[in-house]
Image (cartoon, rainbow, N blue to C red; front, top):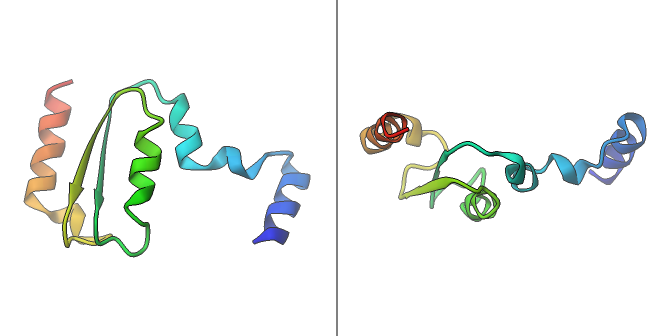
Length: 88
């Protein structure tokens, strides 16, 4: 990872930290609905809190026991997405 970061930064003159989602979130100016699950073992739930703390307009939905993939087909999640879109 350190070698990849060094090569990428020297080759593309981009600070890899600036590509981090929580840092990039500070540039977002539209309303965002962030949805994350407490049992997502691929991306820990604390990442959702890190990202949303830098969003100026956001709602955060935390689900339980849906993991990283089941969240996409959950009826409550789908309904929340629809409600969010219709409210904007």
